Image (cartoon, rainbow, N blue to C red; front, side):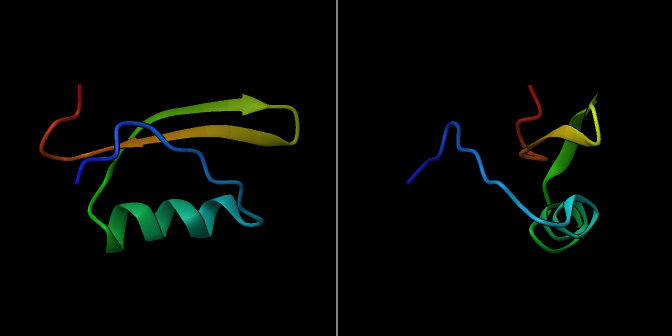
Amino acid sequence: MRIHLTSAFVDDQEKALRFYTEVLGFVKKHDLPLGEDRWLTVVSAESPD
């Protein structure tokens, strides 16, 4: 199974980023400020493009 794109709203963006990168092995691609929040994008380490 492959997931090409999905979105997840979280309460704690720092905690979510650590989980997706440190636990699941994704790589941060984008980190854009949006007012008080930010738009984070993570991608597969095997296929970062």
